[in-house]
Image 1 (cartoon, rainbow, N blue to C red):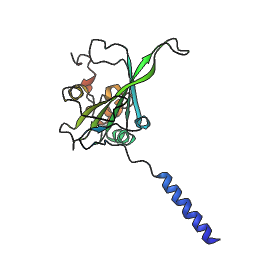
Image 2: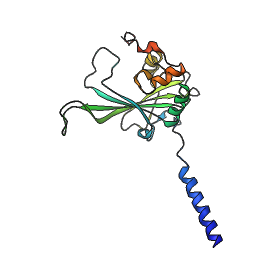
Image 3: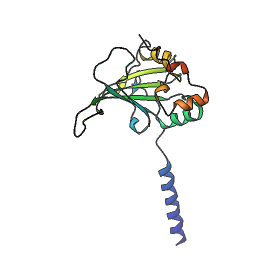
Image 4: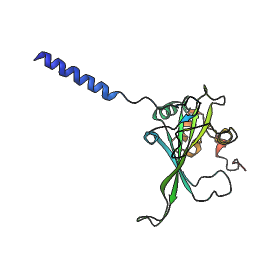
Length: 194
């Protein structure tokens, strides 16, 4: 009887320990030829914000798209404690079409098909400028970093907190301000690219 009780107690403790083991924190993974692998399960990360029809040019780019921004839980928790993004942080910016009329909807817009996603990575061991940017469509499994003149320079010039547009993330803006990492000048409306 005591042997059985000890056996069941041991099995129970092993099951509890196994249940508490979580997946490793999502960090950037690369192919042998230095391409970023498409992040898996990013929709399980922390949702930061959405935009609709956001465009950094005064000229419209056509139909308004939604952008949904996600960051891994571990990076989010570090930001909440410091106002800074840790090494290996990834942002996923998911792009989706918008639609006005459908089903019972008569006004406003809702999200529809995926149009791809952008991924921003902080990895100073791999990138001399620390941050790099990648684009994926629905079928892309890996991607090369975009040229520096594209996303990098815009983030360098206009991001409120180290290459991230925290000025558009309402729950993180007060955190960055509290830690003194927020660049107030990023809110100037006359600073956008021409």
